[in-house]
Length: 360
Image (cartoon, rainbow, N blue to C red; front, side):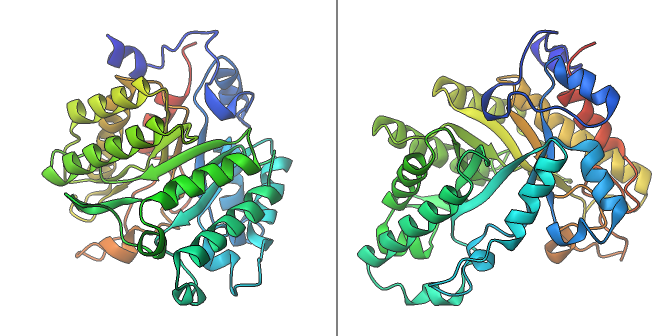
C-alpha cells in the first residue's frame, strides 16, 4: 500500500514538505492549494538568457515551478573565466527572477569534474588545489548565503565504472587532493553557510545493470565514510536521466533509498528526464513510455521515502541537452521533458503532478 498511496499522492493533509524548502508555494491557484497541504516542491533547470526573450518559456517556469536551478551560471566555466575573476551575472539574474516569483533557487554546482576553465589545468599541487577550491566555495556560497538554501556541493564524484581502488571519478580535484576533496568542499560550504542544505549529486543508479549496482554500492560506501568522519552532509541528489528503453530496478533503487533514509539523508530528484532516442517514432506512444519510466522511478523512491524535491533538467522539449548525445536516428525531435516544444503539458507532467501534489 505504501507505493500506491504515494502514487496517488495520499501524503496527508497536514504533512509539510521536509528539508530546505519549507514554505514554498506553487504559483497557479489549484497547485498552490495542493502544495500548501503538503505537496512536494517541483522545479526545473532554467536557461537564464531565455527568461526575458521567450515569454512562453518564462511563463511555463512561473506557472509550474517552485524551484529553479541554473543549467549553467554557477559552474566553474561560467563563473571563473580567469583565476582572478568571478562573473555572477547569470546566477544573480536567476535568483532575482526566483525572488520575484516566490521561488527558491538551488545551487549547482561547487565541485565537479566537468565544465572547468582552461586555467585550472595549471593547478599543480595539492596545496594550490585546496586553496583554489576553498576560495571558490567561500566566495560563491558567501555571496548567496541565506538566499540559496540547497547546494549540489559535489557533483558526479563516483567513477563511471567503479572498481576496487578507483571508485572516485578522475578530475583535477581527485588528481591533486584524492577523495578528500569531497570532505574539503562539504566542510567549507558548511562553514560559510551553516544553514544551507549540502547535497552530493550523481546519476546512473536506477537500472538493473551491474554498472548501476556497483555505482550504488560505491555511493553508499562514500556516504558512510563521510558520516563516520562527521563530515557535514544533508542530502543526496538522484539525477534521474532515465534511459527510456530500460526498466527501472525498482527493488534495487528502493533499497538504496532506504539506506539513505537510515543515514538521515534527504533524497532529492535533481535532473529528471527520459532519454527517448530508442523509443518508438509515434509521439503518443513515446510520451506514454516516457511517463511510465518516470512513474516507476519515482514510485521506487517513494516506496522508501518521500523526496524533498523533484526537479527536471529543463521543462520544455524545445530546450534539452538530450539530442547533443542521444539524437534520434529517424530525425524526429526528442521528447524527454514534461512540456512539449510549444510548452504544452505532456503525460510526464501528469505523472509529476501526481507525485508532487498532496491528497485532497
